[in-house]
Image 1: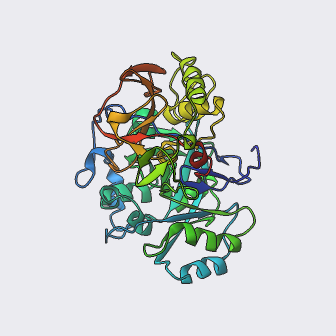
Image 2 (image 1 turned 90 degrees about the horizontal axis):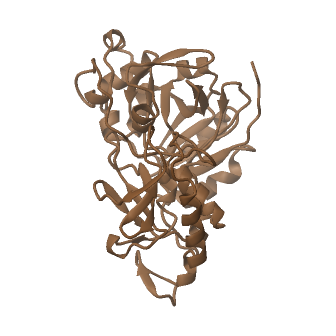
Image 3 (image 1 turned 30 degrees about the vertical axis):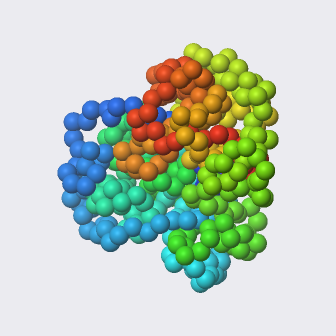
Length: 395
């Protein structure tokens, strides 16, 4: 068994700890535009049934998962390289403003040749932290309790992990028991804690924290000094925060007046677009960030880096790298974002770069290539004008 050591990385508004395990590591993963759901011969009945594979094990696992009792909004994700000390977990639970804390196992797992950011969870309690359609699906969580893996809609539908198919790890073969985007940054797979330990996930190295009545950013800063070396806390849903007082400019966006200097220069925009254009025809690959293959957010990050703009890795973060602008005011270099994930309709799942003249350049989906085409408005979440200063601070 090959052992490698990794350092912690922040991805998609969340964080996973890289640990000393042969099957576990961490890289940032992107999201892409989902294709049509692959036809299935058998699906479970009931809530979210279209995205849950049926199985005789569902009946056998009927008593293994507590019934749905409502959703809990997660605000912070904490992760370390090793098991978090029990006294630290208790201290966080007692912190003013913290309503609930869920202990999970977190790392990246190799599944059928893909590095997949994965959580090992207690299906009975973790389900409350997921989007309501996912949380309410008894069969979905029974499948997870029975040993299946639930993967994000994009990874499953476009990353080649077909619903009901078998995926392989060095230590285990599992069935894809559900498509379910969990809404927690770059997390693309969830298994039971027992299954996670068989895969090599560390035990109890991560926390989900719900604190609905306090500022998530301030809570993060308050907790950080008490975390073990190498552990970090990040906000699950980052929001646009203007650095300092932005006044005296020529554009009022999101209630703030933005000077032209807050945005990319004409030369930077030209450089980014030119760089993206050199990749026309290159294949889309889920999780790829160049230079020869890309997913949607990987193309954005790579092209903007050529212009000296430090972009976060995934769509969830790129969405908050600048103010939103009306589609009628879109300019070359602006980013277009879509919400097109049926398992989590509020999730930002795809990004493209506005090319100009009503066209965009994008890495669309598996089986397709980087290309330029007309912009589409179906499922459009909005248009963002990138501020390099903002982008460099998004974690």
